[in-house]
Length: 208
Image (cartoon, rainbow, N blue to C red; front, side, top):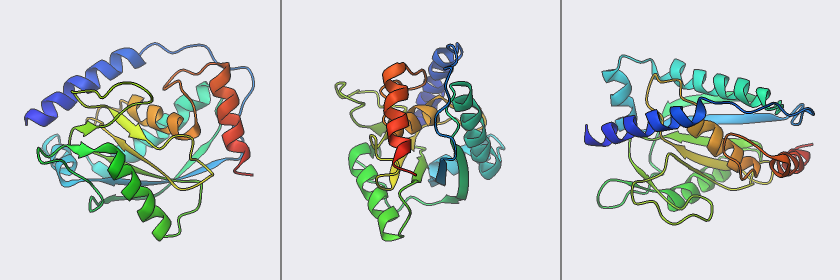
């Protein structure tokens, strides 16, 4: 309960930041690029969804749909294909206090994807019912955990991975967009400058 109270507060703060959208880019990027998204969640996340009477599969598919629509408003025309939504967490690396070791878990997720011969346009997303610890970009370690953590600039180079905190049923896509943008190589998390667009376009060129 205490863990999900923290996640609730984090989700509210995310929504407040995400509420104001910036202007659209004039040129589109990502045309014809497909993200093969595999969606996973753990028992804690599932139990929180059940408590809120949320259908996990429909809810998480909706997050992906909303994220795709948001990226389109930023002239990023990638398409997401959700291959699976399932309860799986055998790759989670937990500290003794039952929080997620973000960096190690990402490594284990990408190794899992590689062992399953996932193509380089694959992203394994884990929706976590635990607090996530890890460094975000070059920032110092956050003692309160992070809303998302992901492999950096790996899309279409190798299978990618992200761990996300999302409050079930909230339709708050900020953490999902943030993690995905990081995988695409952007420094901006939800709003992107010219350099971000250039970097993401270079990433997408590897998918051709």
